[in-house]
Image (cartoon, rainbow, N blue to C red; front, side, top):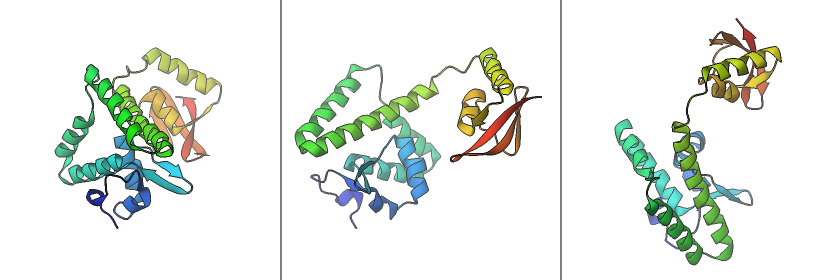
Length: 194
């Protein structure tokens, strides 16, 4: 099996299956790919990432092994200076390099993958700076959910109150969230006024 360092420069994709031999699937997808903004692309039944993304995964794994402080420094080094014009120019240059160095089919996949990575990073940054929901708007939304007997998913409750509910009954902001079952992969909740 090839390691990330031994991948030749002309290789345009790395099978995710190779990474799964080194990392647990949940760790790879839930932690590494999510934190790095990597979305694997598919060719048939196989999932792939670019060599650049594979190197990011290897660097992340190494930083994680050196401790939380080093990991935070590594993640901070990935955040671009959004105010500088050089960041936009750098993204444009990298896309142009990918276009000139790859075949037509690979070009589209890599451009999409690179742009998806950048978009994922920008969304993660933007989420940190989103102002919290107005308390009155949150109370109105919870009251409406209570009146309408709406069933909410865990992600929706977390978005509304800022915390994911746990257990069978969760109290927050004068409302109780009662577990009523599953909704796909998420738990579903009914809102009741206390």
